Image 1 (cartoon, rainbow, N blue to C red):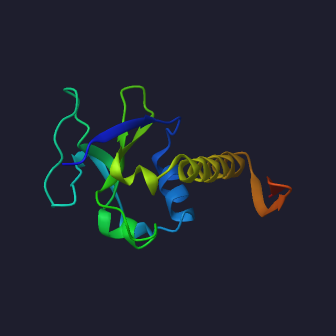
Image 2: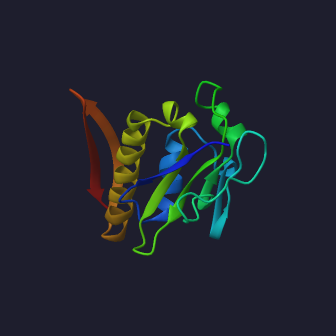
Length: 147
């Protein structure tokens, strides 16, 4: 049985989170989105157990182990997902074993993609049109024009 951990994030917008996961290489059909938390499964196909009395085995946004393997070097053993907290933020629920694939570096890239998706969503609301994204010296610049 794998031990899961909760990794708090500032993600609040499910649509931006799903788009950021797509930017990381997953397809929309590989990402499950649920109104209520659904069970995460371990490498045996068993539901994961509660940890410290909390419901760590459920998440509203889930990527199943088979889809993780096709994108992250083929070594992941368990599902991972994002559990919605009472404050509206999502926590990443990752097994200890799989944290070497779904690492801090990987989560950093996801955070960058999420931020860009949020910027694009807000820009569209105020009437701006996305033009391009460029990278220079490790910094990304997103360009918009008035629509």
